Image (tube, helix red, strand yellow):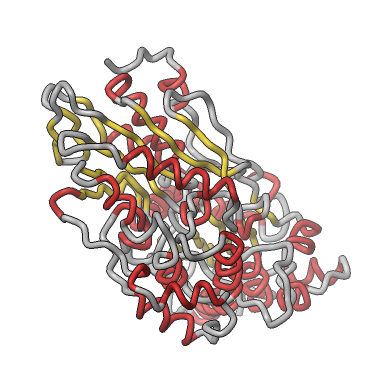
Length: 469
């Protein structure tokens, strides 16, 4: 029986949607009207990424079993229902599942980030590490596998793997030491490669990724409830422990070779990728179902609707924006600046919205991770192109932590460069060194959301005015 509304699970699902906590402060300087418009549109997009409320709408307990979306999964009296998962949006989804299914859930385990706010659940909630895996990540992954291995054909696994799970639930193959797997993650994250390429490698150096959790659960049925945090909504990049892997070990080797990393990765990783153990298992498609609760398309639709409410036309740039952060920032800034000055490609006033996979940052040899993040780098790159233009840009990571910082991203506008100059800040050097947080904090332009409990895509909003002749 589902819990009463006063239960901890039901109370947790009544929490407000994620929000920009310092919106008024961010809109209080620079090109204030344009900044407020861009921020309010971004807020609508972030609210639309609320995985918990989407799960509440998608899941219900029925007389015959459990409904997820348009599908119903039959259960017998003896059927076991188990919840497993890891990721930034996983706690919100698991909380919604408890509110909807109550005692029908027999057991469960999820992993969350150390900085994520949680409340008591009937299932186990463990803290693990992100963006690099740790011993805690390995312990959680081992427990997740052990939880699903005893299940039979009458049982149901509700899998909630969302963005961040690759680090939060990470278990090295038997022939790869944990330190070597962590070193692999460090090299991949510093390479600047797209997230799909990163995951192609990680899936083949794992005991849980690449569909291995679903294989361990068979013959139990697996139902994935997840949110898309990659361009194109590719399932085996979004929730790879519990869907069919579409890549091969040869693909993983090719990625490492293409980015000049093959000789840099630990020898144990190379040996593993050249063995048959690196190949992902073949899953029975009849046993795996996936429900995408939230996507970038939905976020863009919400932002366009918010712009219309504010009386502005809006254009969706893309739901597949990704690439090197500084180049992405420059590209969209130039689109906006050209539109403001020449009325093309978009006639001002207009709001440009977009989202995509996580933009990347390529570190030069010998460089280390700086204090900043891809969205902060993209905002500074945009600011350098927008000097004097009537444009305000908001760039945020929907999980609330851009590059592992306490900030979701940043705001830039046509006055950012001038304000930085007055304060003696070197924006170009900050961009080159990937230490973007310092100058942005001094400018009062860092976006604060806290840990949002979701992770859909990076969101981009540009409010474009008409330049004076």
